[in-house]
Image (cartoon, rainbow, N blue to C red):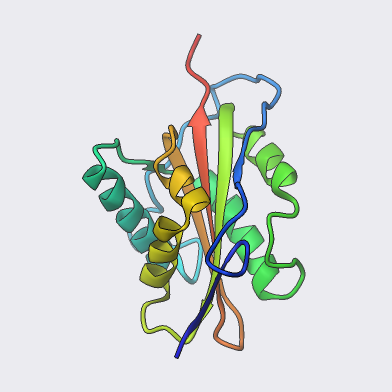
Length: 176
């Protein structure tokens, strides 16, 4: 039998919508890649990250919401947090969220950022299990349905077979 945790530990969740206002900067550097080029992956779990993206966008479509654009830059930030949790360098928590927001702001001017985390082990489909848990959790669900236009996803797995997932949601600043 698999085990799961969503931030909050008991399939309930604390309010996890965060707002961070970065310093404004030029938008010249803020172009996003839709996904890594074919044949190239920037993560050993890039395929799982794309499955999360597809499942979240499918759910948003079912709710009448626009899809989230995949951002390689945001995914790199999410991957770093997932990897740190998987390696035991960071607790399974939103600790350091402000720093992740600042890292994103260096590349993408944004209005709002939010984060969903999941941990699981022993499931044949850890991604679907995590997405289902997020949808069933009010705080995570609010992020999934939120007014965001970009997302980044990071998946990491440790030697014990535990999966750590981070999904960051971003609402870009509108052009002036």
